[in-house]
Length: 445
Image (tube, rainbow, N blue to C red; front, side, top):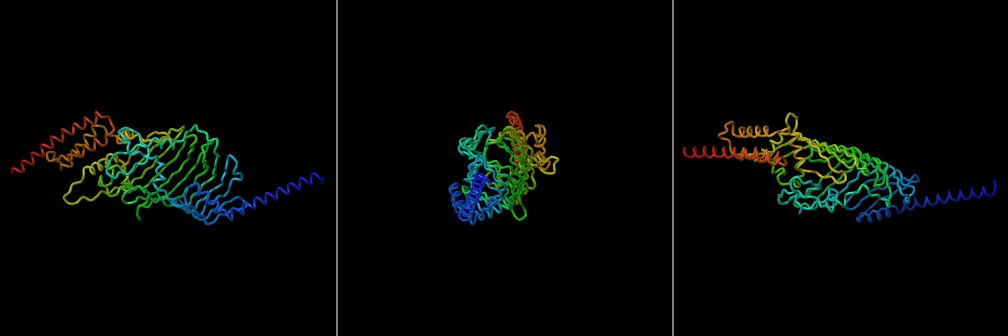
């Protein structure tokens, strides 16, 4: 063997042992002081206290973090990464499978509300306006729904044409969350504190791209549940894929046995359970979301699983809004086994909004009613409440049926609403005079 060959071999051996020594030093540093290093970096990023019981790094670049606690945010028994990037200075960082076991996430309103787009209570929504965002609970019974703060929308809206040339592409081959839970709270709510426990969370996400660079179909499959009581629970499933850089997606969201009354404080006054005379109301909703080139089409089916009304005390009459609600359920049940509402709407994937006037018209169309049918339903309701004798019909029955028509027609053609309203004004006046006449005759007798 020549001297040059021996020198080359010697250099290779030296470099090999230097690499082994460097690699071993990294392993020792991570295994001995890794928990302090990771805890310090996470604490600086999130501005929260962080505790880690143990960090282990193997020669095959598998990392395990045990007993991770982030103050007022997250706890996890174990975070396991099957493969770390070999070069953290590269533009693309590839992680293997990340497995999170028995995690508990606490999210208060100040964290989750920006994700739903903050609302401005000083900007009331008018009929036909579009809105997007969380509904702020009303403490005074005001029925106004707030519009979103446009400055916040722009803050969270991502420009499709923006190129993140300075950032890194972070890819995670697979993210698996096992046997975990999420607790949503609202520290801003007055009165009884609000909390929502989402338990039994199992989530699998494949090809997770944490940047705006490139196009990756992120596949996801999630299941969880919410326990309303020992007998009732809400089952939640979400499955599909999303390609956010190209503004495309195909997903299905299913919610079974949603407790309508549980979120009562967040509804406008006229939709609250106590206003409608509801004891319990459980709903099932299935939504298909399909998007291409930022055009998002949402098809939703909502079914009433079960409903119970507040008992009426002896000598009292059923409230008009309760009668209205029952009639609406009858309208949407038709020949179906359960009252069912179907509606579709189109919006933008990167800034979704919901046009309430268009939604009401869609629901009106789904009910399959025309003005003639409306009038027949109204007259039948009056006769029913009068015991078959229209002369004895109380004017309250007319008020109820008129409210039914106005409620369903709300958002429809204004002329049509005025015509129907005029008919009921006449009918109410006639029946009112009849009632007064009968009352006067009885008094005279």
